[in-house]
Image (cartoon, rainbow, N blue to C red; front, side, top):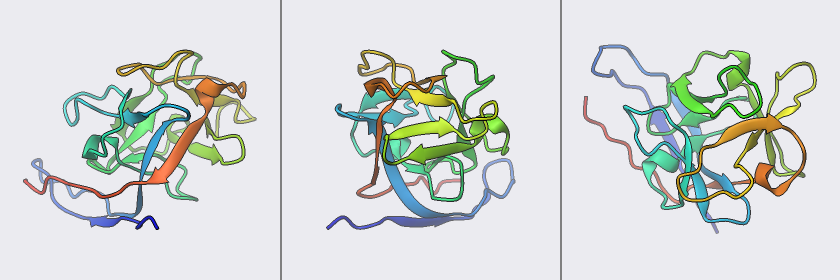
Length: 166
């Protein structure tokens, strides 16, 4: 049986700004049929979101709680996956959570797709792992098409490690 990891974060960062209180299940999110997870390998200084070999590390752990409509980085819960201008082919990035449309995500468990819930009027833009995902591939957005490159697994993370240094 998998244990659900729960973390409450409320601390002051180096700039003296209080970080948000993120309480919920920590997940690993990755491309179905692969051992590649959504990762921010350069965190906290680099905002590039890539597919990397799943390793359970803190840069691969996410809050994506039902009803929250956002994917928050567990290492930096004040940052969310952001789709920029939401146009096809745009690489997603990690950006300060702001609630704008390019950060409002939903998950269709029957299709295994992660979609922008406020893309145009019909949630027609999906997270995409590119046609042949590999270690280091960018994660992009593309028109929802039901193909394998838009299918993702979401599973509870085995654990979480957070740097508590100021």
